[in-house]
Each structure stands twice: as C-alpha cells, then as structure tokens.
Length: 131
Image (cartoon, rainbow, N blue to C red; front, side):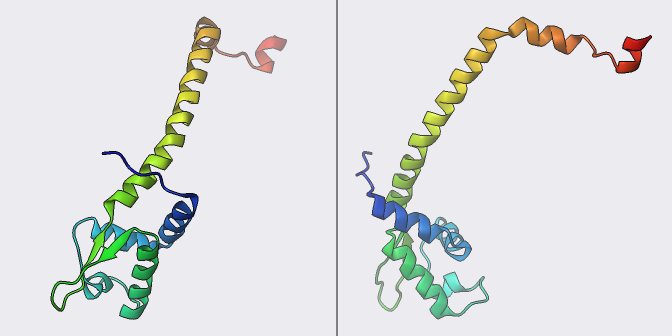
C-alpha cells in the first residue's frame, strides 16, 4: 500500500492531538473497534461534552471519523493516518539506527583486542603501587 505524503501541518495537528492522554486513550480504545461517544466516555471522569471535544480534535487531525448508523454515530479510527505518521517516524528511526550500526562497526574495527585485554586485567589501587 502506497501512502500519500503527509504535510507538515497534518503532522503538527496529529502529534498535537496525540499529546493529550485522554485522546491517546480514545485512540487505544478505537483500535479495538468503533465506539459511540457514550462508550468512549465511560472510563473517564469527564463529561460527555468534553469527550466529544476531544473527538473533534482527533477528527480535525484526521485520526478518527464519524459515520451515521440510524441513531448511532460511531467513531472510527483512521488507520491510514496513523500509518502515515508511523512512516514519517520510521524514516528518522531508520537513519538513526544506521548511524548507530556504523558507529558499532568503527568501534569494533578500532580496538577489539585492546578492549578485551584491559577488561581482563584488574586495575591496581594506589596502595598496591606504593608497596
């Protein structure tokens, strides 16, 4: 699946939306399936209106959407947006991992025996050197 690129503004809105623990909990709940505002509000000690506002923030960020099913208005997770965010993060994670692998290789080439020799020989204390 090829994802369309995410704009800087989209990323800003998405990461800002996920900065709040209530919104992250809502995303976690929606990862198990669609839910109504009432169902999403159950675990929180805040009003349904407050939960609805959190959902609006998530909607504006493109992380969730609502549909109509008769009288129900279930909220759905937009997995494609999360996937786009993950792809953005992975780009930088992979670059960092490559730098660490390169550093490991350099360290391994420069002193593989010196490291093992100094680790095997115990260091003497000042008292031992004076005797």
